[in-house]
Length: 361
Ligand SMILES: *Cc1c(COP(=O)(O)O)cnc(C)c1O
Image 1: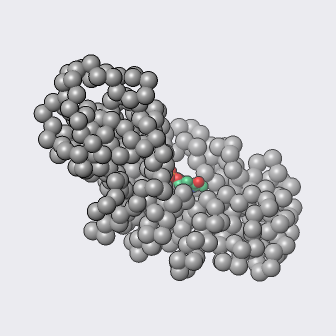
Image 2: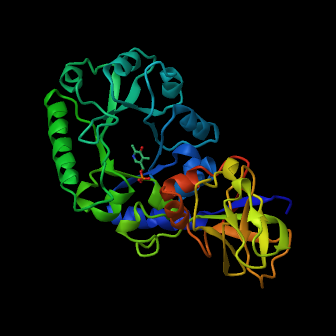
């Protein structure tokens, strides 16, 4: 194997996670595969999720949806980040459902050739996407040239299941749906739950859930429990080669700015990945695992490499593989807490220079 770094994707883990989430929700499941399936690989993950029972695919961008169609995927696909001026016609021609959250976008969509399939997105309290101030005016629209398939919103705090805001958002969702139905529009599919809500709050599953992070085997928030305690199997293991192993004396300054010095005579390993590949430059107190032993980061992360302290007795040699996170040692959650971030960002930012290696299990 000639690679210097690999992201191994366990597709069987994705299947298991989809099965678990479908069972939990008891509804249709939309597999969220935006951003290259959270860095796991759009096409492979989408095919796997559909085989495991996912009913829909969801992406942010229409380009992502078109890539799925070009790969021969015929399942329904929803794209929800489609600002005015987007190529709505290509979306309709490719049989891609479009989320609508502004009047200006709706007007463009209503004029397209072929009836656009739309999902109306409403802002129930997150104050991000979805109709809010334009809602009453939007209700007066002429819906006759489009097909209203879905009605949806998004939770801001589903990873804090006890929060009052969740109940308020659900209540607002039902009120806004009733207002839409009162003008004669009855979308058959209603969806609100993300991974956290699917795992914690069965009352809001409605007719479909939209699950992303949990499908990749990661917890929506460590406060809700670890992946393991939620019954999820992390799908990504990130490995890299040691470009070089060297023995150095105590007191050696390591890396840019000499921010750290070795505290003993030791072996250092130069790991062949850096912030250009998505290793957070700010990370502290994370590291790699070699033969079950943890080696912490020492010094600053560089663009293509970083240094770990393997310890005085390490048997690691130049060219050996280490695990950055995954099936042993550190987890994506460890790297997240080491860099003030969330596991979502850790996996999603693993860059295109890192080949994805699919393990079909
Ligand atoms: C990303 C996204 C999801 C998935 O959220 P997870 O927390 O990863 O399950 C669901 N719905 C929308 C609208 C999203 O943008």
